[in-house]
Amino acid sequence: MSETPIIEIKQIIKVYKMGDVQVTALDGISLKVEPGEFLAIMGPSGSGKSTLMNILGCLDRPTSGTYLLAGEDVSRMSREQLAHIRNKKIGFIFQSYNLLAQATALQNVLMPIVYRRNGHISTKERLELAHHALVTVGLTDRDEHKPTEMSGGQQQRVAIARALINSPALILADEPTGNLDSHSGLEIMQILQSLHAQGRTIVMITHDAKNAAFAERTIQLKDGKIDEDNHHQHEAELVNTSAGGLP
Image 1 (cartoon, rainbow, N blue to C red):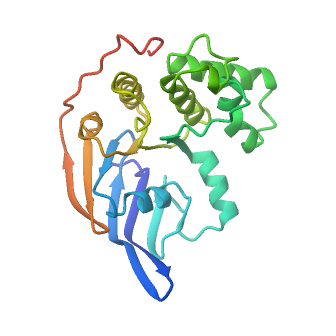
Image 2 (spheres, rainbow, N blue to C red; image 1 turned 120 degrees about the horizontal axis):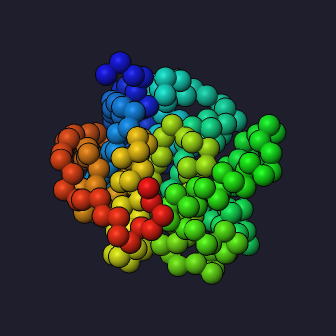
Image 3 (cartoon, helix red, strand yellow; image 1 turned 135 degrees about the vertical axis):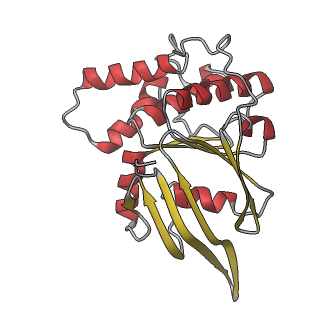
């Protein structure tokens, strides 16, 4: 492909010091993710999944190696620079939703714009963007509802809408269905697959092979290295019956 990869990491090593002991969490990982790919990352506990997610999400820096995010070298950026990159280029979806309990759905979705301090965007435009993001994930009448007034599946939809609000280059989903029942989890995976069909680049950490089947590519980590890297046909069909409001 002629396009710049969204993710390009080269020989990433991450070493943690635990007292006098050094633990190598990532051991020379190299990986490319092209624009519009949907990648699932799997592996047993201790394989390096969380460490890799933290580095891809600019939440941590590698001990050595290079990380280019949409062509920009973020490997050695300061914490302040990384915070700016996270807000500008990455949309996060967490297992535990990470919503503000006292804020409405609309206010939660707006948070990345608030932190970005986009002074040129009017309040009206911000509200319209947030409302549209909620509609995109099938929440047409929950703008003023707080997290405690919504189901887990609805809260995760709000979290996805929040991840979309700044039109990020990359969506990172960390066990996005981990706190949901199977029905709600399936709806969330259908939303992610729909976003992928629209051209979004998604990287998802999951323990669930059924979730991984929604991706077009799966890598398996083992002992801090990539053990397998498989491109596969979609085993799950995009079902739009219960994810109302999706295009």
